[in-house]
Length: 241
Ligand code: SAM
Image 1 (cartoon, rainbow, N blue to C red):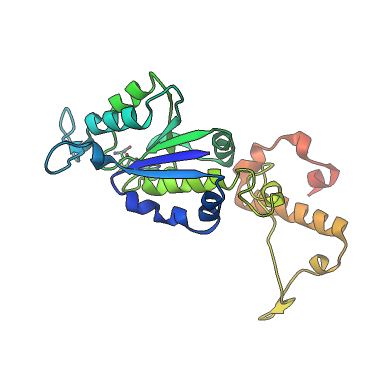
Image 2: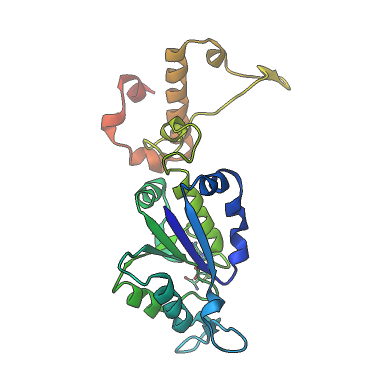
């Protein structure tokens, strides 16, 4: 997968050199390019913002630098899926991340100030798929943290990036439930014990215990997820719990 990220703070993306994403890049599973939007400015101050049309607080990102940036990064005929960060966008979910992980090229546009002039999105939509993406129902200073989060959620789903792909099948938000609690050695720590069943060596019992815990956790913590669960995925015992 190729990922391009445009921001006025490309330094935000240094962590993409680290850990599993860094390794995936070294192994050629992933190409990440960061770009400073100010490269496409022409004034001495490299300004990227202007006062909002119609008045009001704050500043708005000017369309000019974004337009030139997209012209240069996307000369065609191949086009990326442009993801513009916005609190008014499609909320990031595991399902959305899975959809994005199937794409060959993602281009992130990180907003700052009061966001991008709407015409950047409208114009880009004439030649590529554009989706505004939100991290959640709160407002950040800028889109960099949102882009980093989407990159991390998406790239760990790419084939070969995770050492043990089975982790992906067993985790929260896969199959609609939260994952069961996890333990490691020692068996007893500060008066708290690893549940006996996890030390029993009986894989059937361990699986059942994990399934039960998963359901209990989801009911207690995220009843909204239970309400959306496909009843066909529940077995007899699930229903009794
Ligand atoms: N005035 C804008 C509004 O109310 O929709 C918020 C602007 S915010 C201060 C600046 C930029 O941060 C946004 O343009 C967006 O790129 C990014 N941002 C803020 N909150 C976000 C969120 N929840 N998800 C994704 N991006 C966000």
